[in-house]
Length: 254
Image (cartoon, rainbow, N blue to C red; front, side, top):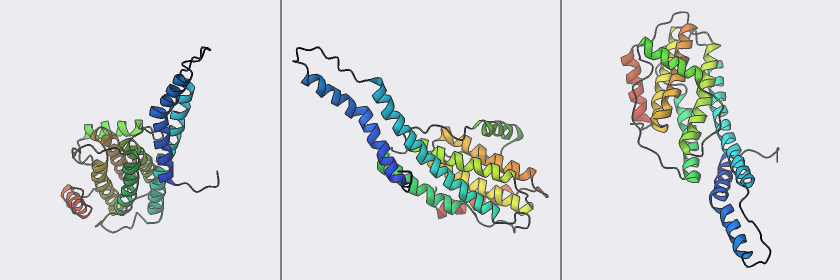
């Protein structure tokens, strides 16, 4: 089995089956068994063993967490290849996103798989303001929040939980990669643009209660790039906002 290629959709089907067994099938099987032995002269105590339920749940938990990990590492690898494949000191003024198109495409694929298998409906989203334009106290609070984010954790059995986990692994990797780089003025501004656009996209996919921590990781990546920049001048807010609005229309995020 170790040589078999990983198929995310098949993994999700296994999760759905295991959850169905845990919630409905195991209890029904034991119920049928009780009915069969009800008239038996021998007393049989047919109670569902907690170990069986726990084992089934743990198996489903392991698979859905692995699905999340694979997705997060896929994003992380893309961020790594993009960051390491460019000279961030001599970059030109940013006019577009390097990351967004790939991230949107990948997340839509995962989102479609999760919706198809888990059948988890979306909640309405409340758009937050850009985390990249906060006062000093708010940025410090978000910086502390970003440092407390647990990158690898058990994944809940729902679409939002999986997508939060994928973004968390990818954005944490992006933050760590930025810490290793050196940036010129426009290189820093490119990271700033990436953070703003990814922040807008995240809020379309993730519940507001969870999007704050993810946006904090992006904000921290920008702060880290500023500290590693030889000429730390951020792009004007209005220009970043104009780029974000253009991408929102392009990818229909509004």
